[in-house]
Image 1 (tube, rainbow, N blue to C red):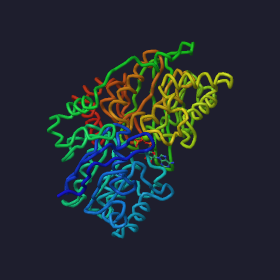
Image 2: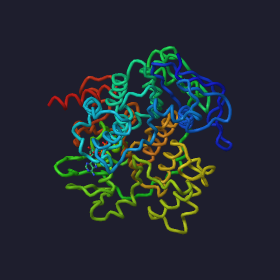
Image 3: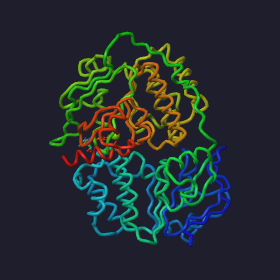
Image 4: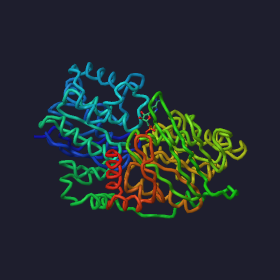
Length: 495
Ligand SMILES: Nc1ncnc2c1ncn2[C@@H]1O[C@H](COP(=O)(O)OP(=O)(O)OP(=O)(O)O)[C@@H](O)[C@H]1O
Ligand SMILES: [Mg+2]
């Protein structure tokens, strides 16, 4: 039995063909993974399936219904979590759950969901004050209420830490009934083996549809196979790094210093006792589970959030004493896409050029230069909101680098970005570091953690381990970074 049957469906947006003469079936009672690069057509396909979009041609049947003509009837049978799930930021965790339970007309039974999402301790916290990953988990909990027949999840694991990502899949398997069909889209290829069926999409077409184990036995192999199917990854010289000019002349031992930084909300320590020194040209990774205090640390380091106590120094300048001067030395890419969506790519760059203190007479030249270096010239007149996620992230990085800063802060630059674009990003990051730029970065991809020179593992607001990736692995006799991450956190819990 199939929950979804699609034959020869095409969907175009202007010149762009998002879904291209596509045919596939989604089997009932199974978890199907929809894997693909950014802008490969995953979200468009999901929107066609739930009747939010109408196809130009071809046929779609979902639970035996026409998704456009019988949308109301279909809506009652499905649960849908869009990429940007609508939580009510001014309501607490528990109030959000109650609201969605009311909407779906189901009883207030949240214990299991709260336990699985580790949100039971934070029931009274406003959704707006949750970390990125905690929000994602709450969104999933809301969608899982009321056991729908067909569950569509558009990248539910973006920004979710590696331990919780395993739990998320378990949570879905445990909470659905055996007849529930799940369609789960993802850019994380290491999730593929937890699906019953994997559909890989590229440029609006299906390039693989079958059992994940039939494509590759192990996770690493799977990633390489998918890259092959997409035409392979060719590493080229980073033009971004080639065109980067290290301007700062002062000789200084540590370009970035955190000295006992702390942030308290009421009695809750979001960050406690955070100290580290980063050398020029070092890539320093801040890793840790959701809610550990990574973004809070970033925000304090760049003067966007006032610490309860402690100091942050950027190129030797105390951020409290001269925030403007300190900030002119760094570029910051926030976790949540924080550029202006309503204006064009070019306008965003111009705006940041001014914010970062580039003289008015030089702005135009520098913006054109950076558009060229980042391969964004063709997109320059496009509204920022119309860009794919990969392009948005690229633009964020371009804005952060517009003033050639000696320091770069990247808060989850690759979350939700596809595997090829991720490799490109890290090619730029490592090449920039070689030119002397100091980088502070967070990621939930453990393979990326390996690119860091040193790592601070953060947990419940505190650093529980600092060292090179191999030192951390050695400390707990772990083979992989993921393994080390899990063991170090477990060790800290036992203490
Ligand atoms: N305004 C606030 N009021 C109360 N608690 C807050 C506030 N802002 C942040 N927090 C809490 O501080 C903790 C740390 O959040 P932070 O965003 O730094 O985590 P993170 O490590 O970046 O997590 P993620 O990996 O999910 O992005 C979380 O428990 C969060 O809910
Ligand atoms: Mg964060």
